[in-house]
Image (cartoon, rainbow over all chains, first blue to last red; front, side):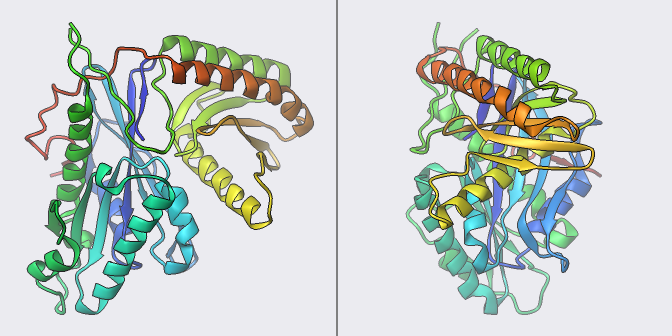
Length: 204
Length: 170
């Protein structure tokens, strides 16, 4: 849950990139890190806790200070989870305090079962953390659209976005930075909008 | 100027809004700990990885990243505690050659992190940190029970423009 510090005039929010192994979650963070436009000093280091073969072991972490709203500094913390099935405990740890989620799906046909399994795992983990899934804003990113064996977007929508409330989804080729900022800006907009919507009636 | 109040809707407990009085008290507690224990830097962090407050030498360390990693390490250790049939490991200690670090649980949401020179005794830091943790927990409880009445009005943000927040370098 976002932290609001009235003394230092800071709003801190946490966005987690979730999805199956090798789907491109870390690539999203690398691309944001490499291409985001920020004032000097407003972008932190990208920290990756990875194995020797560059697979995410614990998480990747990227802090960015993006803007000021009415004098409040908005600080965003972007995390990825390890996609490999065996690291579920780690995924639960990273999800603690999450404000918004980008679910990075792999568009290849043969990865569809893993996408579905990972999404179900996300729902399970949020329940374990006593978080109500409909309360957490999320977007879908259909990554690797440049590969030859990808499923049509309509098919991916049917598999992953076939719910009562459909969420925004984006085709992406993360390693070319396509669809990366679109998904990030949308989840940011959704979670900030949630706070506006939740706000109590104005005081005089 | 209008003020809006944000409310936590998640079931999972989360940190309350902190006002100047809270941060002032927390900072005083951290400074008191630094003075008594000879630690270099003291932080209060959220278990989700956010840095809440820091005192002491805050320039030579990347505190934002330390907060994210220390909370991850602490939470991972809590999971290990459960696996060995312990209710919790209330603190973790990392011994280094130049600096060492102690992380202690404060309450359901927060942790205290002390970074100190390797020659400083961890026993002393732990001894002085124990009452600090209690006093910090009391202040956070006060903040939890308070209804500050003034929150963050995000209505100025143009939510119709999704490209506004993060811009890509051209």
